[in-house]
Amino acid sequence: MCSNIIETVNLCKKYKTTYAVKDLNLQVKKGEIYGFLGPNGSGKTTSIKMLLGLIKATAGSVTLFGKQLESDRNHILKKVGALVESPSYYGHLTGYENLKIIQRMLNVSEKRIEEVLNIVRLTKAKNKLVKQYSLGMKQRLGIAIALLGKPELLILDEPTNGLDPAGIHEIRDLIKSLPETDGITILISSHLLSEIDQMATQVGIISEGNLIFQDSIEVLRNKSDSQIRVRVNDANKAKIILENKFDDSIQLDANSNLILNKTDDNHISLVNNMLVDSNLSVYRIEEIKSSLEDVFLNIIKGEYS
Ligand SMILES: Nc1ncnc2c1ncn2[C@@H]1O[C@H](COP(=O)(O)OP(=O)(O)OP(=O)(O)O)[C@@H](O)[C@H]1O
Image 1 (cartoon, rainbow, N blue to C red):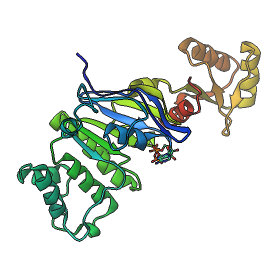
Image 2: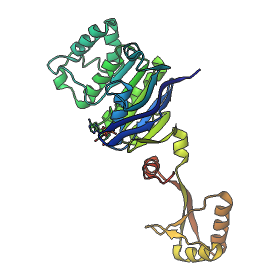
Image 3: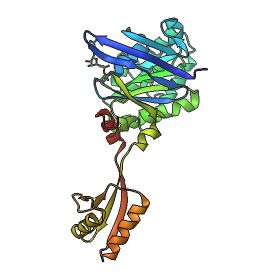
Image 4: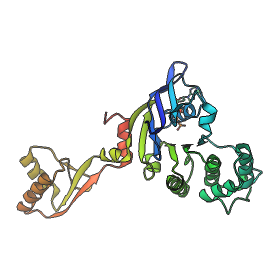
C-alpha cells in the first residue's frame, strides 16, 4: 500500500511557451514535515496551487491520500488546510471573529476555535482587532484558520516570508509541535534552507521548475564538504614541507591557516607528525564543514549533479 500523502507524477504547468513547473514527482509520506525549497520564481507557489486544485496542471497528476485529486476534489480537499500567499482577513474584526466566520463555514464545533488559538498562541490576543496584529500574528492567525477543520495535511506557502528572526522562530516552534499532537503531515515552502532546517524531516529542492533533490535532511547534510584547518607557528614553512612531501598544493586562508582537502584520519596524523618533526608548533587542527545553506546553493548551481 502506498503511504504517500502527497504524490505527483510528471506534474507540469506551462505558461505560454515556458514551463513554470516541469515533470514534478513529489512524494510526501504521512507524518512528515516536508520542506519544499527553491529560490524565488522556481515554481513553489505554482506547484502548491496545483496540489490544491487552485490552478489546472498542463500535464501530470496529483494524488492526495491515495486518491487522484481530479476524481474527488471536494472530498479530498476537506482533509487539507492551507496558507497560500498573503491570507486575507477582516482587519476591522478580532482574531476570534475572523475564526468564527470560517468555523461556521466549515461547520466545526466552536470549541475548535479556542483549540487553534491555543495551538498558534493567540489566545491572549483573540479579542484584538486584526488590523492591530503584527505580521507574525497575522501569519499565525492564517495557520489557525488552516487548522480549524482538523486537516490531515497542512500546506504552508512561505509562512515566514517578511518575518523577523523572532517571528520565524515562533512559526518554526509552532510547526515542529504539530505532528506530535495531531499526526498531521506538513508541506512548507521556503526560499531559505535555514528557515526550515531545524524542522523538516524531508526536503525537496526545486530550481527553474525542476525537482533537483528529494531526500531526508540527513542526506542533504551529508553532502556538506569537509576541510581540515591547521594552525601552526610558521604557515609558510609548513606549506613548503607538506607540498614537497605530498606533491600537492596546499592553500592558506586569510588568517594564515593551512587548509587541507584530504580529511581522513591517517593523513591528518601523518601531517601532524611531519610538522612536529620539523620543529613546528601545531596549535590547532580542526574540521570545517560547509554550511547547509552552501550545500543548498551548490545543488541549485548543479555542483552535485
Ligand atoms: N500566472 C502566471 N503567468 C505567467 N507566468 C507565471 C504565472 N504565475 C507564475 N508564473 C511564472 O512561473 C515561475 C514560477 O513562479 P512561482 O510563483 O511558482 O515561483 P515561487 O518559487 O513560488 O517563487 P516566489 O518565492 O517568488 O513566490 C516564475 O517564473 C513566474 O514568473
